[in-house]
Amino acid sequence: MTDPLRVVLADDQDLVRAGFRVILGTEDDIEVVGEARDGVEAVEVVGRLQPDVVLMDVQMPGVDGLEATRRILGPAGAGNPIKVVILTTFDREDYLFEALRAGASGFLLKNASPEDLVDSVRVVARGDALLSPEVTRRVIARFTEPVPPATTTRRPPELTDREFEVLVHLARGASNAEIAGALFLGETTVKTHVSRILAKLGLRDRTHAVVFAYEHGIVEPGRA
Image 1 (cartoon, rainbow, N blue to C red):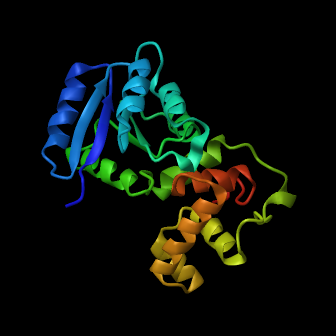
Image 2: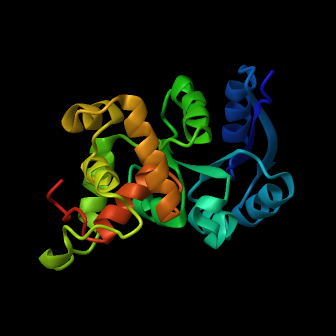
């Protein structure tokens, strides 16, 4: 039997943490192993317990959730197995983008359904990103600085031509099925290419591959 996913809850509201604990506690494959009331405590608890997933509030006293995420994930990038999902009551694009910058793997509003909360833990734990392609394109296109046109088709030397093609489609918000259809590949092959892209570029997940593509001019902001 597979061990349950270990989760830490970080939120300054006791009732919110209690509600999340009840929701997640009904799932056989998820276990809440710790809680934190602020960012400093979150960093300490996560460092001590090494959970699989952290559900992190943004606005907390002292150190906020974005800074706590930076401290937890640190410079390890793809080498850090801990996944962070940012939880907030504020549907703000700047929060979302800063969360991605900090290394978070997902972003979820607190008014999401219990099913979405549970699914968020499972999604990020298996290495996927908890963002729709539409949201990813909109936010990154808005907040990433434009780059000179001459760099927009430069292939990272680590990638093969096929991997570069997959990355371009990924940056435009395409799903594995859509990439497979566009490139006449099987979905399993696309999934393998995506995994290799992440490994070669040292990226945490698909969303950070999109960030990489925009920041390096592979896809121009506003032209997804």
